[in-house]
Image (cartoon, rainbow over all chains, first blue to last red; front, side, top):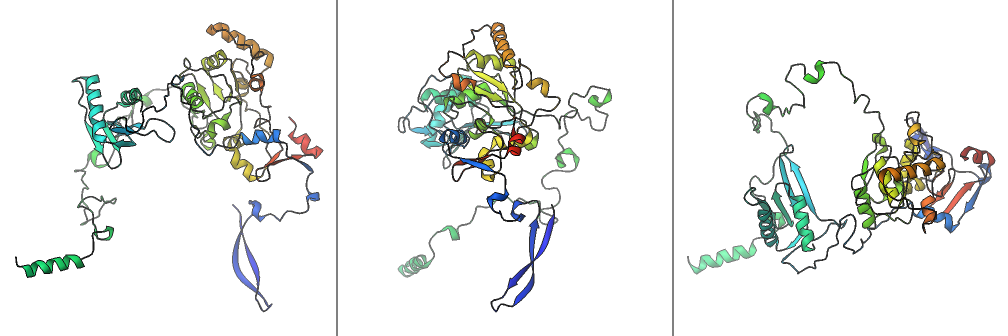
Length: 177
Length: 293
């Protein structure tokens, strides 16, 4: 990019002009370097339209600043369900994420060899949730798998060894969480 | 212990500073040094044993045979992935994801859907600087797709077209050049620049067949041929084609962009002023001729 260095004339209070080597960068590619706009007659003719019908097309292009509230229907074709359980129904509670989704994630590390299912936003008695999920998963898998868990009580995270994301999500939805 | 000592200890305790963040320190080993120590500061092997691939974090790439000529390089072959870095990419979006966006009110299906609507949800994005040329709508979740939409995508498949048309919807594939894509994926940023909406360019040589084919519902195809292809696809997939003419949302379903248009309802050459909520339109005949499609 072309840079030009200009000398800036600075007039002192006494009125004596003094030339200082104030370095001012000038970018020829930037519109800021172009001369200030002249009289409108110098430019191409245009008309100003403030028609609300046309403005509707602009408004639909502007992104929404808020995440919309989803519908409370339970038979949606995508399979998504709203949270029906209320706080206090169970000793534990799992808050939905800001996008109204279940906060259950799969964390893959150690070059794909370690898979951990993580449940976030756990409120209330996290140990009760751990016991309930452990009970559910041992019933699903029987003796085939050892369900090892890790509880981070302060952050409200519950980690389960292995990929049980779909099973845990299914269980949470059945509970209405 | 005498009472005298006790008093002293209590006094000392009263005068000592309270437990606070300023006089707490971490447990030993709680903070891990993010630097590899040199020489006497923990140099030597850094916990990685003596020599070999484990000491060098050398995870060999797939197909590498430790110095032999790899099998995949031994024989002449067809280079399927040749020039993959210059080919146009279309990041996929599944019908299942689209249905979920619709169910969760992230997309308003009473209006036509295009790439700017998808990007404005914040759940899908493309990077034109990474050779992304738009959205590829894939047929995953086609059986559970139930929405009646008018959607404009950049790439799609036959089964996706069938899933949308079965529900009484309309799909168009249309091409956007890189400059138009940057404008389309973030319209607000473009309007704030205060520039005139440019003309959309026509597709390049190798894409013009795709976008002028009625089977792909291309935007350059003959509308008569498209309605014929809609009928043919309904016969092939075995569903009854809903009549668009009798639909209450007829106006929404038939709204399409011009070949040179980037946004619905806004013509090239117009300048959108977001501050005063007005649109400036050129009246100069030379400019009008330039922006004419």
